[in-house]
Length: 253
Image (cartoon, rainbow, N blue to C red):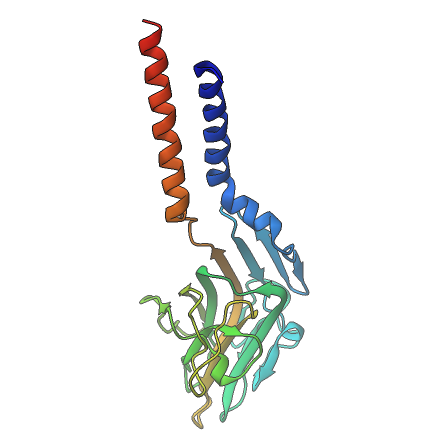
């Protein structure tokens, strides 16, 4: 094989190699199981980075509830619904005020999760009952299945004024070693389990309350980093191409 043909061959190999590295995240996403596009009360849109954005209107019949109401109510206690046809709010003075939901076909994967939602305060005399947990849950609802590792709540998650909504946010960084937050060791890892969300507060015997509406979850995968062996092969091919090119140039001066 002469120098010109070898140079062309190496150039073609490097082009394909570079294209593969650039498109790796997209190729990986396309080869995985197809993402759901949504369900009752929620929609999912795929993002260019290989992630997705989920929007849930938080309607009464779509969530599993404990001491929470909202059936058909688009306004109550001075609050008005933000998305969908109604919102959820606490109604009991005792026990957990909790709702949860799981998104069939959507599994937890390594990456970052940014969650925003609206928390409201009704105009009852005992005021606001601040949720003690709001965030992702692995597989099915139980207190032990909360994901607490890699969770960061925004400093702006403060109590809303009476008859007002506040936007709260929580972020997660999840990797292959992330486990659920409760239970005995070794705790199960969360990657590959069905993704869920829950928000919970304890009534503590008062008529204090909170309301919940308008949930968005955005997932972004970690950037793809070439393996050391791949990097070494790529560097070697680049060096060989440079050497062949310089030799060709010297021969044709």
